Image (tube, rainbow, N blue to C red; front, side):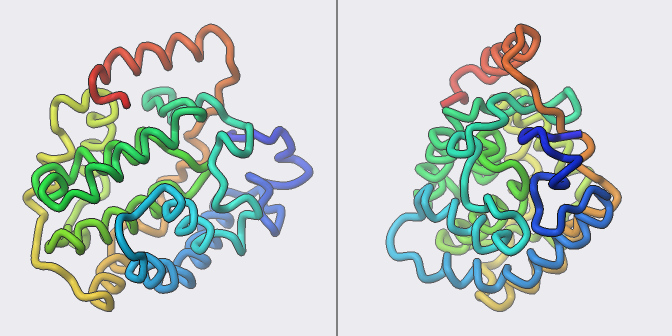
Length: 245
């Protein structure tokens, strides 16, 4: 059980406002709040003047989840919990003190229309590697990535994507970015630019977005700074090589 605050029994999963412990119920409610706020979050991004920044990344997360998670919009480093995080023991993420730098690396590439057209998967992979939030990373980076693509004149056809194939490509991307696994998956899904309303509908129709059938909360393991955790993290950094920023 992912319990970085150490108070699951008294305050529920990640201190959600209802103090819910049942992860199936929690994921359903989490998605309700996401659906209720996605239009507001997309409108926020649409109105951002100039480059999208890390502060906008935080703001989107806050808009989506602040009614459910009191800490929404704050990253792991700010919260001072979950310095080292892995998923299912197979996927390692960036250390909390470097998560901002990883996301900003992705944003630097994503704000360049030429780079995101050529390497949309590398940018998504940078966001995923940063993993700044305790929960809601996937939905937040999906909205940010979709807006960056829209600004560059194209969209990703998420409706016709396959969740299992996407997650497999993302796993390989995190372990070995040089293999361009996520670029290979996303580039064939490039399609015509969506309008603001069309983008909203496409994202809501994206298969598997509700989180049901794949309860990631149960698969995420928090690692304290013991030697095994440190070694796993350092090995992930070595594996990523130049793609660790």
